[in-house]
Amino acid sequence: MSGQLPSYVLWLMAAMAFMGYALGSVPFGLILTNLGGAGDLRSIGSGNIGATNVLRTGRKDLAAATLGLDAGKGFLAVLIAWVMTSPDYSDYTASLAALAAVVGHCFPVFLGFRGGKGVATGLGALLALSPITGLVGCAVWLGVAKLSRISSAGALAAFVVMPVVILALYGFSFQASPKPMATLLISLLVIARHHENIARILRGTESRIGQKKD
Image (cartoon, rainbow, N blue to C red; front, top):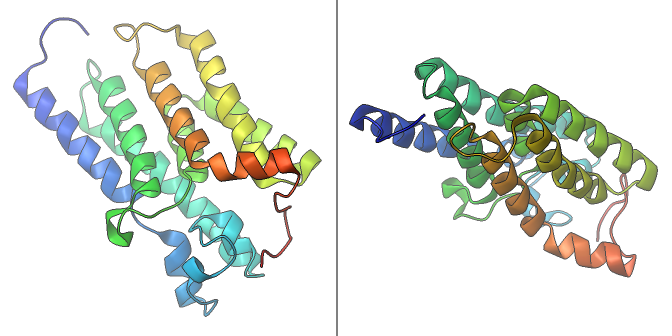
């Protein structure tokens, strides 16, 4: 893409950003735990609305559903942007929708902008945006989490690796592809949302998978 964007493309990009943010803002973890009788997720464990905290309720089924739906909303945001945009601009609207979906999950308008950490939504969005990058991220996340039994360690490792992978695939030229920039911004946001986890990992006090948090 070169030169000035047509006005309709700018409006379409704004619409796809809004769509991505709205989808990302849907708090599936909170909805499922309320419907499933597990209580208000915000008063359980870490208070986070993601799948790891849902697991602390003891409901593995709800945790798996939350993981799938949170990833699905990121994937769907990117898919809609691609379908709605001509090939000349689809990478740009899809990258914007991916970032907006993660921002929506982290800062959902429905919960007063107090949301989750963006791991599942980010992985879903990046699976759609760059399948190879997303698959590598999922593999790293699962592998590190299994070895360490610390979900946040797996997530952090995945979002450190994925920008490197996508840079190797596309290079770092925004004119050539906006995907690396979107991946980098998503990764920085997810890592920043884990600042407390990073501190606990360094202290050796981070909760392990399956451990209920007081």
